[in-house]
Image (tube, rainbow, N blue to C red; front, side, top):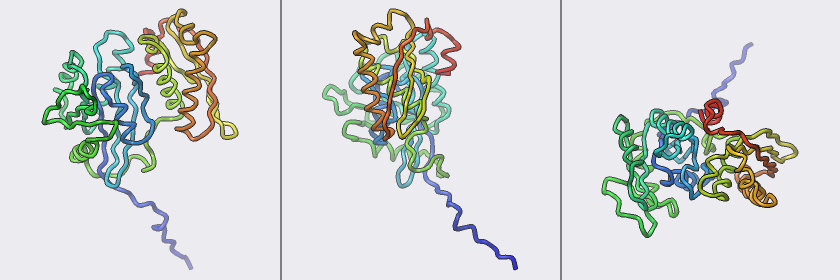
Length: 294
């Protein structure tokens, strides 16, 4: 006699919430990456005081009781005719097309300029909801925000709930795109590269970080330890000594800070071996730019 098996108890029910993609757009250092990290309470995006720390669009996944919002942390829109910067700008523009909602960040602590005008021109052609956000509202020298904008502070999370509620109004209800315990879809290589880039920006002067390409040459996990051989390519021979520092002090400090940060994020022991090489004018080489930023 055949016995029918009830498999319904083994089928995971489909969860539906307010779900969608939200692109954060703004000029460099307008607070997009800091907002993502504060909202999700995890280190998702690299942050430094220097502009253009974010060079590729990073996804941060926010989950709460009634929503799953995938934020695109886009590179800051800026004026430049350099090949690398043109590609970086194009990533931000592509994210606008992929998103359901756009959140425009304006830094209250700075005067507006050509970059804000460029963003305004971009958004004229966007037929999607655009939410205006004024960031860094906690700073003493912040100017007064417009009444049609939402003021936020990533330091104390003021304005976060108002912003989330406004975003949710424009999102459809549907199945989740990711498991609810995901907060980013970055693979381990990307996470390691981004943290090392962050430490390079934090340790070097104004110009050199933009000429350093971070590449994972080898990555393996053995006995609970993550081991990474990382190549740091500079565009000119003269930049090698600056990146390495006297007696290797600068390079050692970058590696140490990256290791400490990654061990917190990955919750595993991490060993990083950094090597510096010259890849002449890599930031003007179309094949290299396509491989790493395309």
